[in-house]
Structure formats: structure tokens, C-alpha cells
Length: 301
Ligand SMILES: Cc1cc2nc3c(=O)[nH]c(=O)nc-3n(C[C@H](O)[C@H](O)[C@H](O)COP(=O)(O)OP(=O)(O)OC[C@H]3O[C@@H](n4cnc5c(N)ncnc54)[C@H](O)[C@@H]3O)c2cc1C
Image (cartoon, rainbow, N blue to C red; front, side):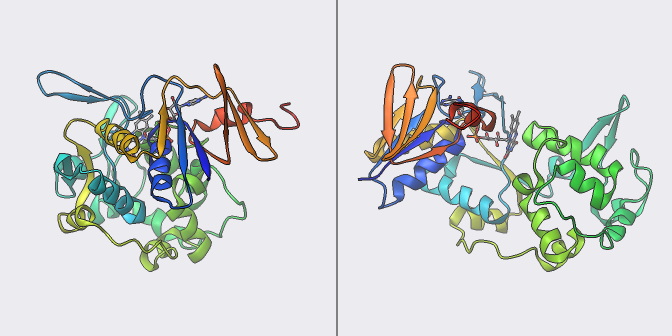
């Protein structure tokens, strides 16, 4: 009998529970979510006229092993018919704008965009890319995305393009986000090839062999840049919760905020407001800043 407690019922916690549910080594999964709904940042307002507003993510990239894996899960959940793809030829994929100094700037795209000076940049970006090959490999185990891009491609590109990219993708600050966690492909390209440009051309290392399911294959054939769901991204955690509920192996608890975690000889004790839960293993999918304060550590006990 192996019990795993999953702390946090956002998409991370639900996805972890989905895989635990399929594992023959796990007999019971307990999901503990502090709020009254599952899904975390995946939250959509659906209006009666059919309009959908996203409060968090609005598009997921299908590229790479992670992208294929997510689409395989969407297939398995029976959400394939709900998919709304946006392909690379779509105007929304081609045109990216950044609002800077009270002006809207269209970001350079394609080879021609790299060859000429496109405001707000002060010189053709191809020069940054060419110089990047000569930049020495970093020595740190990790660093912020801003520091990484400044070092390799120049501060201007980090300040303008990467700063806004990170605000758009993670709603986060590129000066605080880890490059190793957020952009492992770039980090590995430097580690393996000594350069992002060479990494992009020659590959940045082995990726998990993951056969694409029907949806992932469709995404490749139709050149999807991103995809969303017809009734909003919230449909994803809704379907996942339903799948977990029906599995008979997973207990889903809402309004069950984790207050304290203690490592006991026989596993873990998780204190909630109204009781204690024991588990052999825990997977924390709570916001990272919370994890430390819940745990017993030398400084914290
Ligand atoms: C505005 C915005 C836009 C984004 N756009 C995109 C996008 O377009 N595409 C994309 O791929 N990504 C996007 N992202 C990133 C993406 O939304 C996140 O990476 C993802 O939702 C994180 O999921 P998670 O489960 O790790 O965390 P969360 O969604 O934060 O879930 C954590 C869960 O833990 C629960 N919790 C917290 N404390 C406790 C506790 N003490 N006990 C129990 N439970 C607790 C919370 O209630 C929550 O449900 C966006 C993010 C934001 C904020």
C-alpha cells in the first residue's frame, strides 16, 4: 500500500495525480487544495453569449516533448474535440507587439527582421546572434533569465524582448526567474554546445522519446503555434478532476489548505485546519514560496 499526498490542486498537482493514478506502484492518491476549486491559475469566465475570458493562461505550446505529452493527455481525457489551434501562418502568431516608451512596436520576425534595425532595438539583431557564438560558457549552476540573456545576447534584448516575453508567459519577472527551470532548452544549449545559436542548429541534447498521439501528430501536420480550448482553459482541470474522481484511486479535497508538513519515521504528516493526514510520499505543487514556511527545518522549527 503506497499513499501519495499531492499538495495543491492547480494544473501541476492534477497532472501529477493523473500520472500517479496510472502507476501500479501507487495505491492511493490524496489531493489537498486550499481553495474551493481545482485548477489554480487555469480559470475561465464563460459568458452566456459564448465569449470566454481567461484569468490565467490562454494558450499552450505544442512543441517539444512537454508539448506532445500535454496533447497526449488531452487526447486521453477526451478533450480533442474542444481544441482551438492557432497555426504559425495566423496573424496572431506572426505579429507580436511590445508597448515601450508610449509607443507600440512590432517585434522583428523572420530572417529579414533580423537583418535590419527594427525599433525599439538600436541595431540589427543578427549582430547579437552572430556575436553570441563567441561568448564564453557561464560557470554558475543557474542564474536569472535576464542575466543569462544579457550575458549571451546583450542587455537591450534582455531588457526589451525577454522582459516582456516573461511577463506574457509566466506573469513573472525575468530578473527573478531561473533560466534553468523556465528555459531548460536554452540552458542546455549553452552547457552542451557553448552557444545558443549552435544549440539551436545542432540540437541541445537528448529529449525524452515520446511517441506523439493523434492530437500531437495533428499539431505537427497543421503547424500549430499554440492551442486553447473552446470553453476556456478551465475545461482542462475540470476534465482532469473528473478523470481522477472516476479512477476510484484518488481522493480530491477542496478547502483543505496545508498548514504544516512534518517528516516522520514512517513517511509524512500533513496538518490541515481540521485534522492530520499521513502519506508515504508527498508531491508539492503549491506555490514555491509557500513550501519552505510549511516545513520543519532547523531555522524554521
Ligand atoms: C496571468 C498568467 C498568464 C499565463 N499565461 C500562460 C500561457 O498563456 N501559457 C502557459 O503555458 N502558461 C501560462 N502561464 C503560466 C501557467 O499558468 C502556470 O505555469 C501554471 O498554471 C502553474 O500551475 P501550478 O499548478 O504549478 O500552480 P498554480 O496554478 O498556482 O496552483 C497551485 C495551487 O496550490 C494551491 N495552494 C496554495 N497554497 C496551498 C496550501 N497551503 N495548501 C493546499 N493548496 C494550496 C492554490 O490554491 C492553487 O490551486 C500564465 C500564468 C499567469 C499567472
